Image (cartoon, rainbow, N blue to C red; front, side, top):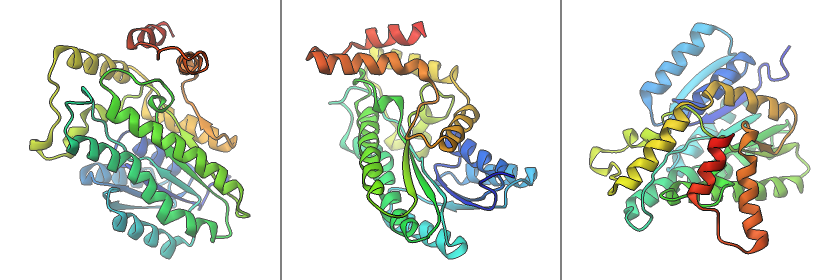
Length: 289
C-alpha cells in the first residue's frame, strides 16, 4: 500500500507539462488531487485522463490564476474545508519570457515575476499556516529550474531571475520550517531540459502581449534551447524522480544530475572572483553531457 494513499496533493500549473505529470503520479499513489491552472482545457483533459484510470482517491479541478492572492487563498480554503489537510503542495505554475533584458517590456517582466515568484509566495502565504496547524505531516515542493542554479545565460534574465528567486525563497522556507514543531518540510525541484509547453507560454496571454524577439541571435538561442528541451526528459520522468526524491526526503530535487558540472562552473567563478561563464562555455558543457 502506498504511503500516500488517501493523502492530499495540491498542484498549481496542473493543466500541462510537469504539473499534469505530477497529478498523474499522485493518482497512481491513490491520492486526493486538487489541481489548479488557468488552462481550462488542460484541466479538463487531466481530469478525464485521471478519472479513466480510476486510480486516484478523487480529483477536483480549479481555474486559478496564481497571480491572484485571493484565488490562491480560495484554493487553500477549499482544500482544508474538504480534506482538513494538505500533505503535498506543489507550487509549480510557471511561464517563460526570454529576450534582451532591456528590450523586454515592464509588462513582460511583471508577468514572469507575478506567475513564477508571487505564485509561489501566494502558495506559501495561504497554505503554510494551515499546514502547520493540521497535525499531519506535509511537504511544500516549489518548482524552480536548473536556471535558478546556473549563472545568467544570454536572453534569459526574466526567466532565470524568477527561478533564482524561487531557489532562495525555498531555501529560506526550509530553514524556517525546521524551527517549527510541526512535521512540515520544503523541497526545491530544479528540472533541466524537459519537453513541456513552457517555451510557448505566450499561449496563456492575449495576442497583443505576445513576446517579440528583435534579433536573429535571440531567435537562434530561443530555438536552440527549446529544441534541447523538446528532446529532454518527459514530464512523466520528472514526476517519477520527484516522488522518489520526496520519498528519500531530499531538499534538492535534481532529476538530471548531468547538469551539475554547470552548477560547479558558477560556483568556481564566484569563489575565484572571475567573470561568469559565457553562454558558449555553458552550452559546450551542456552538449558534452
